[in-house]
Amino acid sequence: MRHLTALALTLFVSGCLFDKEPEVVRLSGETMGTTFNIIAIGEDLDEAALGTAVQDTLARVNGKMSNWDPNSEVSTFSASTDTGPVAVSDEFAWVIEAAQDVHAKSNGTFDVTLGPLIELWGFGPRKPEDPVPADAEIQAALDAVGQAGLLKLDRAAGTLTKSNPSVGINLSAIAKGYGIDAVAETLREAGIEDYMVEIGGDLVAKGENDKGEDWRIGIEKPETGAQGIQLIVPLDDQGMATSGDYKNFFEQDGVRYSHIIDPTTGRPITHRTTSVTVLAENAMLADAWATAMLALGQDKGMELAEQHKLAVFFISRDVTGGEDAYITVQSSAFNDALGSN
Image (cartoon, rainbow, N blue to C red; front, side, top):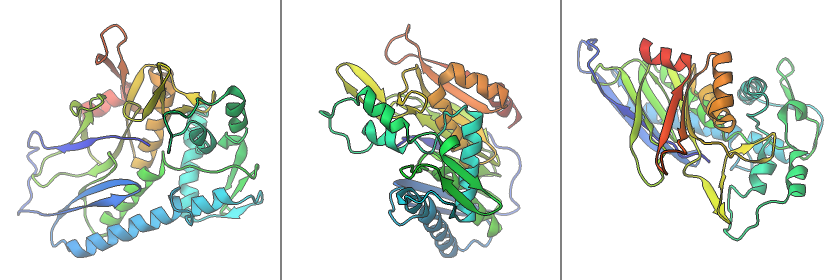
């Protein structure tokens, strides 16, 4: 759903060096419909054991959160027509609780029940000749969207309830971030304090890289068919996620339709913001808020970013400067993060 790039760059020696050359383990592979890359730094590392632990963690997260696995916990819940309380795992409940919090703080813009609208607009397997949805179709889909009213989580009882039997949950805008955090926890349990975990461009980084330098992460310029760096961000013990609309869209009759759906209208976003990067205490929240902020756009998003003290960087199209002209703005918390790292 989202095509993002996060590049770990090494700049400026921090002056904090290891007593001896650290060991570096680099792991990579495929997960969640995208790729993962992990750099773990320490002493006496067992690469085979780490690789197995990482794969086990990713398999566990996919088994609970994957919308592409019909047997996953989220798919099973979505397919069920039971409107009574359903027992859910602690991990699943934790992600839903975080989603409910972002949903409330974003005034409903972040919504894990958007599945009917995503399918209606054809993000998945869409053919160019497929018509744009009619107003009546959009309204019908909206009846099964709105997690605040349609989902009830009882953390004490460990249950989740849907009030409409047709309600489903799509975790694509938060589960990847949770998976990153879960892998990071696996590394910490192995005694590793210097690492970078990246899945599909979103990531978390802690400590220093193998040269004893601070982690530096690049935010990609929002240019279709090109790859360049807009800004370098220092990162330590934080999650970072970027959401963009410049690679996943379709055009019909001269109109450009983004894959980011506004749950209040049931239609793709139309504002000029094309990329949003969020820094947060973990990758799960960064992932969710990046989607919410892109749906909101720069103007509304900046108001919420300042209200909730969120570190957000917006890239928007400059309509006065041509096709590849952009303007950037950042929240106060993002500016503070640049200065404090």
